[in-house]
Structure formats: C-alpha cells, structure tokens
Length: 325
Image (cartoon, rainbow, N blue to C red; front, side, top):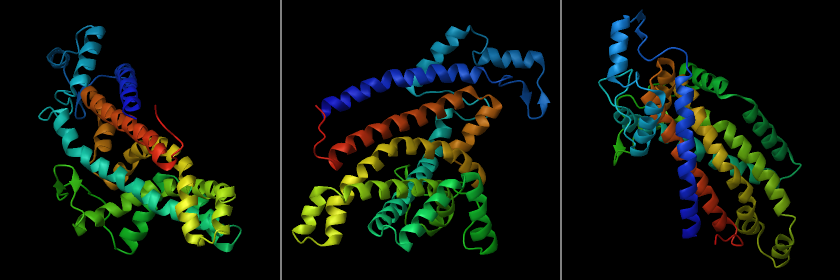
C-alpha cells in the first residue's frame, strides 16, 4: 500500500506540472491584458507599461513561464493584479475553507440521500417506492444547477422565508484551526443548506441510480442467496453483505464527481453570493488576474488529484480481494 501511494504521488508531479503549463498559455490567450483598464477607464499607455514592467509582464514568454512554474512549486503566487493590496495566498487562505465546506457538504448530502434512496429502490424493485425513487433521481439529474439554485431560493427564502438568500462566508463564518466550520452555529447551517443542497442534488440522484443498479446485481449473487438460506435477517444481509459490495461502482465515480462538484461550485457561489474561491476565480478570469488564476487552478488540481488517490485507496477497504502491491 505504501509503495502504491508513493507511486501515485510521484505520478501526480508531472500531472500538476502539465496543468501549470497549460494554465499559463490559456491565461495568456485571454484577449486583453490585466492593466488595460482601471474600472471602466482605459489606463494611459505609459502607466500600463510601468505596471507590466513592475510585475514582469514585459519579459520574454519563457522567463514568465519559468517564474510561473517556480511560484506554483513554492505555492507563493505573489500579489493579485486586481487586488494589489492583497496577495493571492491571503485570498486563498480566506476563501478556500468556504469553498471546501461547500463542496464537502454537497458531497455529504449527495451520499446521505443517494445511497439510502438507491438501496430502498433496489430492495423494493418494481414497486411504487421504486418508481417514485427513480422519478426523483431522473428529475434531479435533469435539472441544472443554474435552475435549481434560483428555484430553491425562491421557494425557501423568498416565499417561505425560512432561509437566508445569500452572503455565506462574508462576516460570520467561525472556523476551528482556520479550516473546519463551527457546526454548532445555527447561522452557519442556515446559510449553508441552500447552496449545499443545490450543488449536491444532481449528484445525489446519480448516486441513487448507480446504487440501485449495482445493488440489484449484487443481491442476485450466490453468497447473498447463501446468507438468506442460513437464516440471516434481510436487513443484515442487504446492509452488511450486499451494500458494501455494491458501493464499489459508487466509489469509482466519486473522483470525477468531486471534480464536477468543484467546478459546479463556481456557479453556486455566483448564485448565492458566497465569498468563496470560485467567485474570485471567475473575477480573476474577467480581469486577467494571472496570479489568481494560477493559484485557484493549482489548488483545484491538487484537490482533484488527492480525491482520486483517496478513492483508489478506498477500493481495498470495500473489496478485500483488491490489494496494492
């Protein structure tokens, strides 16, 4: 297992380097420059050139690429072009915990809703419960986030007035160790419910459908029939012996699903006015803020690589037959 982890971590190095190089050229391909405008006014040519000289944008492209990669390796991205009083590291330190909380809660919601729903649908196959669960799963997959978010906000925030509309993470999010939220804060949960449900709803539907299909296949295996023949209760047979093996396909898609949640959080943060990393990333692209683009992409990439490694390692726990030599 240790050797496998070391190999995966070593393979992650060239992957992250390739991402940094591609990000560099894609950022430079955005029309315009970071200092073309100050607000809505165009900067004078002399001021623009002085700013480009100050931040090294007048140097040859290969020199800028080398500095870009070196900054990425050190995780020191320098000042933000759009917010010159702040460094990119300061912005990421403040916004990353909020975005991570949103993604974690959305994934947790998807698992807590999707797995039980898929299990019940499989156990009650071809019953009204199965048809109802399948309908809800198809409905959840079919509705895009940009439609689900405003709809939930309209119902639960505007009409019913149960939940706040926006502003999560602006002035009250209390963090333990600078990272984990104060889960005992009612205000935190009031602001977190709508964005997390919006982001996790479609993925809970996908997990439900996948769990149902996988469990239906597992419960037809001989060892499940043997468990029933030995007199094991149906609940114990399904949960202990059937569900664990049926979760292997679910674990397979958690890595790509986490990638979808990370990219989807960009839209959700814009809808709910969340002061997270996604909001700054979108603004950075608009303003050609190259250091902020680099910092955000690299953080997202490290998260996705780590998530895929965790998913691969989880196979050995779900299926004892799998061993990493």
